[in-house]
Amino acid sequence: MKLNYIITLNNISCKMSELFKNIISGQRYLFYVKLPWRNEPIPIRADFNDLPGGKTLRCKNVKCTDEEPMNNSGMLSMPLSWVVKIETLEDIIGVNNFIAPSEILLEIDNYF
Image (cartoon, rainbow, N blue to C red; front, side, top):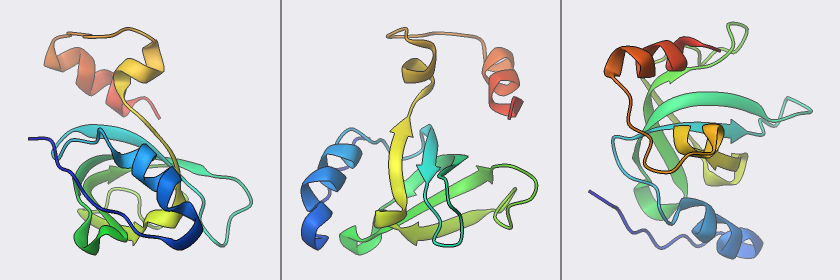
């Protein structure tokens, strides 16, 4: 189910609208997140859940580097302004309509 959200965030509304326009609830993504206490964005693998109020990203089954406090958390919410990039597996490997057995997808997802 494709979700359409109206995102209103001052100067970044156009960027955010473009970033989240094709996101699908329940699909796994690689989110690049710029946390206020970090200098560089960190990658976070998670299942997109929704955008409550159009200002917050809510995702589940979160995996990231072990030193981050949100690693392996069940549900995670963060301001949309922290998200700087979103990639799917197709984006990462450069192949459209990629089909693979679930065992391979799980192995790829565990490679962090």
